[in-house]
Length: 219
Image (spheres, rainbow, N blue to C red):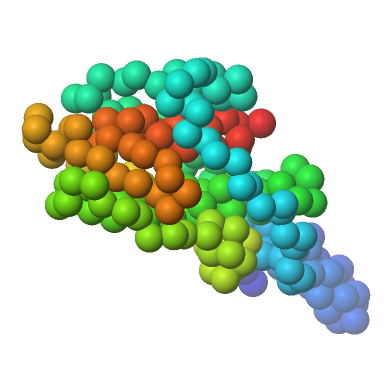
């Protein structure tokens, strides 16, 4: 550092040399600061606008293609786990982008918030799958995804931690489907609104959620 400061500061006047060295130090500090600037934008200091709750019943994707993400239900049973592992790779890279905290519109989640959401969806759905495998005809506990986003303050999360957590949640979910036995695929589970799933259709439903949100963050 001292050697760098001395370069170009060979003037004879002590005052001039001091001023030159001070200017050099300022320039070097600015250069170092540019190198170590955080990769991500800082977390929001104010609470963002709360998106309009998504109260649509997305079970229709089990019957017809999704026009937004082009998902088509019907993945063969042995391939559901692998498809989940593949689909989550459409989200994880977005968590390393410089704009990971940027919302495309005030009431639309950022890539970071979508990453948090999919992580939690996979954890919740993993528990629901366990219920179906343990008890044919299980009823799922309610879960409010919009309240969860606010309570956990998704927008303040560390993108690196979320990427790690999301990858782990996807692997656990995929492994669950990999381990389903032939006689368990027709086990049934119900949501409190009456929606009915078999283990197979539940796999398609979970897979669509990951694929759809990969599409959401792709832009």
